[in-house]
Image (cartoon, rainbow, N blue to C red; front, top):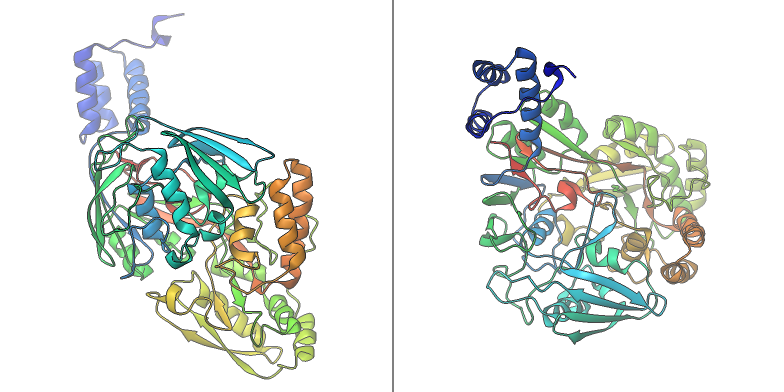
Length: 542
């Protein structure tokens, strides 16, 4: 080996100088000149500069403050992790609290507050051992009593929790020791570690035993709550006693919501904020054209359905529902609305990236003749129906306009009723015969089927009821054989495809945007901003 092929050694003073140059405004040429002045060859200096640039870019750094904007803002934002219903709530939940498990990029549950999770009795009984080095923000240690309280809370109907349907599966939750919890389910469920991490959206986050006041947050998460004003902003400061060594990296995060996408994008373009969510494909080109900005795409099973309530007219007429489903020009929607940041869907919620996706289910085509046939059979031809759209329901107006155009070709008229984003989910969603929803990617078929399609689900958007479906859901939870579960989930996909009131044209990528110096983002396909868990993972390359 000749001397030029060896990695040159640099002393401690040189390393310190190099580090300072990289942290400052020095260019790559400046670094090379410094190394050559110290006696290195041009080739060796270039190698060191490249290596240092890469290491510098990939090594997390501490310090700094960022401002983050979610897609919605509301006066009823909450720090109660069991009641959050918009993105800023879910992100704050992950800032201030922790769960027993957490999902990685492959949607595999990893240990968090739990140091061991084990099952027995065919996944009906689960025993959880807790870490002993965890403290709440007020200094008190985490105990089994906190976990028992947190897992029981969502079962109370008065709380109105979106994860109640999952909590009700936990028939008995008891402390089997100061740092041990025993859960007995009402029936087997091999997916419990996934549910603990991602039921609803962010799973079961742990609060202190007896907590009822959520004007501030007292959790075990990576940040402490310094300020919270619903509908205005929150300020999070680094938790120096966080149980994950070395994390978080930032000193402070200010987070708030802006309903208008143009305003969000302009805030990013002007440098006022560092990270925004809720980007629609129409904004991607503008963002990509700015050198110091980056687009962050997360592919997954999220979708924006046109929903027809099956418990009222016209959705109670099966032929009317089929007429609307055949009006969906899915390829046009994928191309024109989503700018190809999507894949074709088939009126069922399991996307092609899932190991349980059924590729044998025939694709429902865009077919005006079939749509006209079913419309005539329904008896609703040449009538006009209101269709509720809102900025809160992503891309709803664009999709509605396309459906409105194709509907007019067969004598079906839709009157678009535009309502504001603020308050949409509390005042309009599920309260109209025809409306739009946002279904975020879910970690498993069990979660999305339980939350959206089970007969008694709180978020059963279309009012879908099917006894066979409900029976299969319970059977699949108990089945450890993957191939058998795949068969069950395949039949459930077919039942939803045929009889649900959810019209699902495409599976859409989730799009965020950020300044290029914000590092550490990785796609976790259960939602934007790393599945709402960006806070403990990002840092500033200052």
